[in-house]
Amino acid sequence: MTQQELADDVVGAIDDGHVRLGRKRDHSRDPEILDAALEVLAECGYDGMTVDMVATRAKAGKATLYRRWPSKAELVIDAVACMKAAHSSPDDLPDTGTLRGDLVALIRPHSLEDSARKMQVMGGLVSMIARDPHLAEAVNAAITEPRARLNRILMQRAVDRGEVRADADLDTISHIGPSMTAYRSLMQRLPVDREFLIGIIDGVVLPALGVAPERSGTPQEQSQRSPEGQPARR
Amino acid sequence: MTQQELADDVVGAIDDGHVRLGRKRDHSRDPEILDAALEVLAECGYDGMTVDMVATRAKAGKATLYRRWPSKAELVIDAVACMKAAHSSPDDLPDTGTLRGDLVALIRPHSLEDSARKMQVMGGLVSMIARDPHLAEAVNAAITEPRARLNRILMQRAVDRGEVRADADLDTISHIGPSMTAYRSLMQRLPVDREFLIGIIDGVVLPALGVAPERSGTPQEQSQRSPEGQPARR
DNA sequence: GCTTTCCGGAACCGATCCGTTCCGTATATG
DNA sequence: CATATACGGAACGGATCGGTTCCGGAAAGC
Image (cartoon, rainbow over all chains, first blue to last red; front, side, top):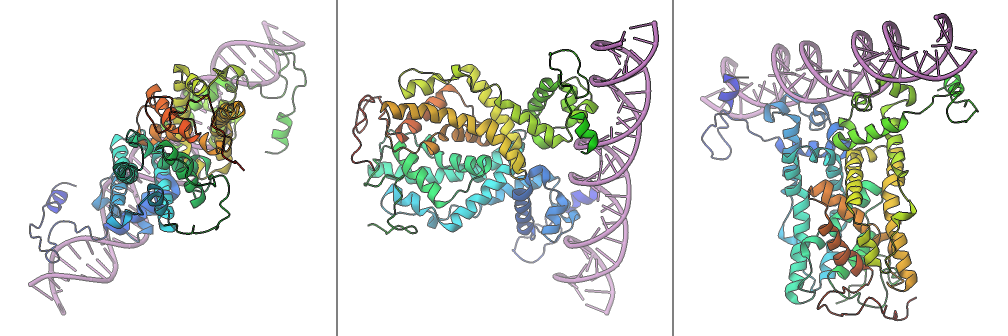
């Protein structure tokens, strides 16, 4: 607890990547552990999650976890923070020429699944967010902000193209999707599927941006055109 | 759970208000207890709330609570269910002549405060909602649905007046306010004030309903009075 | 005034969980 | 092969909490 731990924290000072892990902890198993933490977090929520569950699922010992993180809270904060990593790759930015096309292009099975998982994690953390500003910041930086930023970028591009009104409140509008998705998923417990999201885009987001509801069929009129992938109009 | 409880549930059969509380539990202190439960729930969340806290705050003994409710979970469900009572009074239905006026009229200090409290309770229950369908139903019936219905009624009236498009998806649009309020309050931890709500009404809800912003220069400065004959609806 | 009933308060029990400690072992170094 | 290190696993200690039991006393009924 004293000299022992302090000595452990002395870095080996040689950083040639692979050899000489010498003194300091190597963190090589962090990803598995953090992933397991997120998994349990999504399933059981913060209070329902136990450190043993995480250790077991990561096939690690509880001691290993406590050698690396000082407490359950810090582990969770780290796990949340690491969600941001898998994001903001440039191919996540579609460019179909129209804002509607871009927004719809974001709806893919992988995206739905990823978003659903994030929502579950968020749901499990809500009650804790209210009491731990540090965690609140982590959630905001890892989940809330990236998602809104993505929308904001697409919308700003549309503004620059002259496709939408320049005076629209993008800060507010970029949160419509996340808000209604979270509410539907966590509070109403209804499925967040492609149909729902397209309804939001056509029925809420685009109108808020002053984009006229193009084309005959209003969103409500089932586009009996083709139930699955819409015929790529271009 | 068996004969004992069944016998207890036999009512004294005399309902002259004050005398002869005979066999059944009298429930006279239920309101204080349920209110205390909601208070603690809002502050600490479901898992952070202890039965002792509720008892202490209601100036009751823990035993009294367990005489009336079989478990913490049932107590919480009852507490949530009783939130619905204070609602749906007819004076909660403003009638200003325009939808925007009605929606704005709903924003009052009391309303903001009441809504904030409900959000806190909801936030404390989110992780539990995911795992207890019974509780999920209670939350939906007591919080989610009443709020959306109120919006839906006002909007439907506006539709009947011809103020908004008849083909708008009121089911979706009536959830915009609650969704964005919950997200802002619980996830982003930003204040839900009058300014924010008016921004939602003018920037999101009314545009989604096809009501042109009455404010200055926008694509079509259509007055909200003439509903623009829908081109061949249906 | 006496009895009955219920309530508030406190002690109690069993289970759970965080965080720590200990140990046998697998792996990497030399 | 010998040594050192960290790891997985298990057991432990302390604290908390759900739920139960018990008791002194207050209030209602006779």
